[in-house]
Length: 75
Image (cartoon, rainbow, N blue to C red; front, top):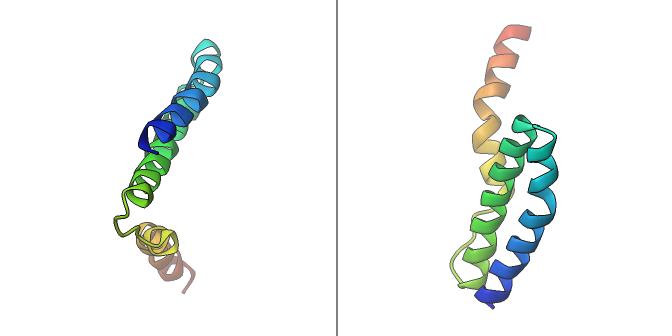
């Protein structure tokens, strides 16, 4: 199952990355790379039967400081 997962990620990367490099879209490539790493991490954790963190908790943890800063600015 892990080999299939790796193959799927390789196919996705091989399809998506060359146009980004060719068009010199470095920011898009950085975002794509970050999202692919997160997807790989969650996928491998799930396949290996390890506890997968709830994505909403991860997003909340990342954006909570931003939300608090905006709330302070608006008060």
